[in-house]
Image (cartoon, rainbow over all chains, first blue to last red; front, side, top):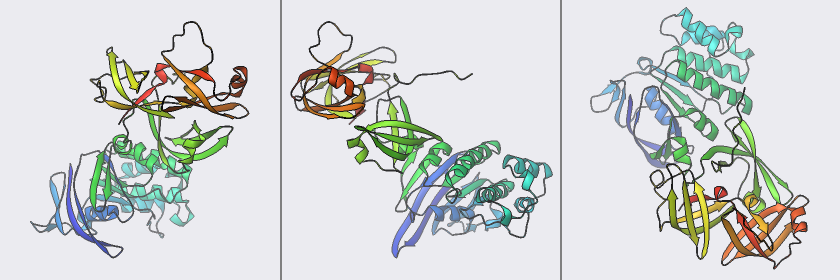
Length: 290
Length: 133
């Protein structure tokens, strides 16, 4: 269990704003912090990692206090078992892939290193330097290095946002696999709706420094209660007018589905919009795959 | 999507399914949902709900005789026809409600539909969704 009770006065775009949150994260949970830029999401991660000090409150991780203003406890970053992955990879350019990952380890563990190289599909390029790698490969190195520390909390600050769509999709799967395999507790900062739905058990919506909504992604983002039993959330990829209707392509969990809408409906939709696709339980066919 | 507001008039449930009758100010429409008053709190007689159904699920009949299993048969007047190559969009009026139907253009021609025609809109109960207000 991770308990975060944090208060800090922030100055965002010359406006004072108090970040004030109180959340509990269960062990092995995957949670997402969602909100506009400047809402304080990254600051929360930095406070957990010990890079920014809260004005008030405490951080308690599996019973151990990492920070407590009243008791004057403040563990330095290196004493906090945290894995941190940023949008930019921050790898050591003079080290190989393997050396970068090994650097994250508290003590050398050959089997674990091999397991990490294999799960992140870096084994074949373990002797290469970061400069020779693609963005997706570099981010896998950064992820493996963060996990190599066997962190109590894995902090991911928009780790996939700089990558292109297909790589992002693939790495989302990897993240999920790694989170499950190593029994991690993960805090993700993300704007990507499909990523949040795919990965997180719970999402916290941060507005003006406060958590305004929290819960399962489908409960938080799907506000209208509809009797439809077949319901998916996704993102609009394209809208094509055809005849008297429009064909709307929606990305749902890595698949693209096409939905007919009237032109009136399509007027209120645009590419990139987050939407819910709903249908009655009576409509879909079930075809067995064998 | 057609979206009409009405009141729940009657609910008849089995273990998992309910047939819900909604009064849209004089027009009754019926929906079958995989919910019961126990699983969905908004399913209560007298509650206001939205009734939703897709335009493409609205069939149109003209001078219909005989028995049809479909429960929702709404007398309407055609107010607008927009013909495309394959599909056509028909605007229907029933009391104060507007219902849109999308059917094939060949059916529009087969029925010889024109503005002002008195027709019946057919919607299967299992195509009608309810939304809590």
